[in-house]
Amino acid sequence: MPKKKNRPHGHYCKICGEYKANEKFSGKGHAVHICKACSRLSAAEKAAAMDMNRLMSFPMRRLSEGEKKWLKAKMKDDCPEVADTAREIYNVCFPHAERNAMKKQLVINTLSFEVHTEVYDGYGDMELADRRFTIDRKSRVLTMTDFQAEGEGQSVTLEGGQMAKLLRYIVHTLEIFMWEQDYCLNPDEEDYDPFLEGEEGFFMEDLEDRLEIQPPKEPEGSPSWRVQVEYTNHTEQDMCSYNDDLSDRPEELYLSLLEYFEPEEEEF
Image (cartoon, rainbow, N blue to C red; front, side, top):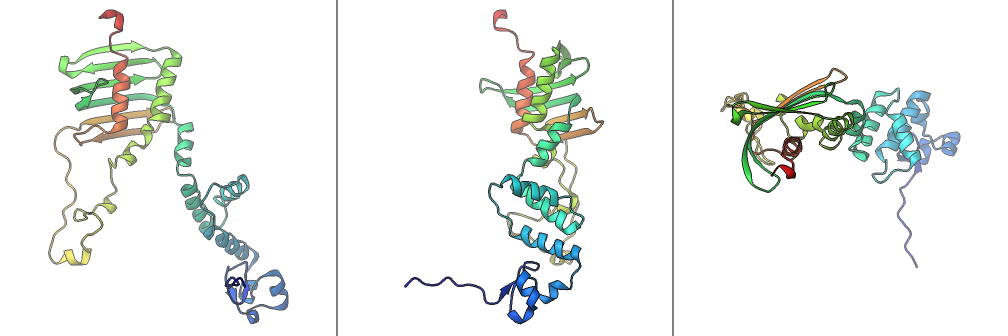
């Protein structure tokens, strides 16, 4: 004979989500699946408890439209605990939702991008880059200054569609507004631990008697690259990196901007 599945003993309460003995329910409470303790809660408390109960068991899979709509509604719930939990779950289910929302709001007004390190060109050769690019959306002018050529500057004026396409590429594809976070360019001081290596670290109470923790030192020398961006909504970014290697997306931006100043094949 097939074995019976093990079921929890007692009766289920839909408010607290627990299985309790039958004596924990009144006659009416037994019928509506609400225990005596939860029946004493206010209507708002009952609703919040049911929402939290559902959120704690929310499926981590592709959500249906109904589930997605309910979760988004709970992100604006009057109960802070429900709203915060729903927001955390939404970010897990849709990790790029916040970025995609920001992309719709950000339009670059001006950009300055400097590179002072070695870069692989489009042919796989290493070259020393020492250039600055500037973009002005209103004038549609893209400028390149080559510091190795005594600061010689070149500029091109793009058509309206070309400039819009370039700026969308920088925001939507390269996601320049997230570089500071993606490349840990400005880690939080609270998270900084100079003695943390891998998964093991020293406890603060052990260090107090033996070591004096020094704050992180400012990097020496010039940054390998720096980006300054002003958006049309008046927000600004100022990011720089002291790593010798040029990260992937800054490198993509460098090569993309450099293409506008490469000679046409007919000129060779």
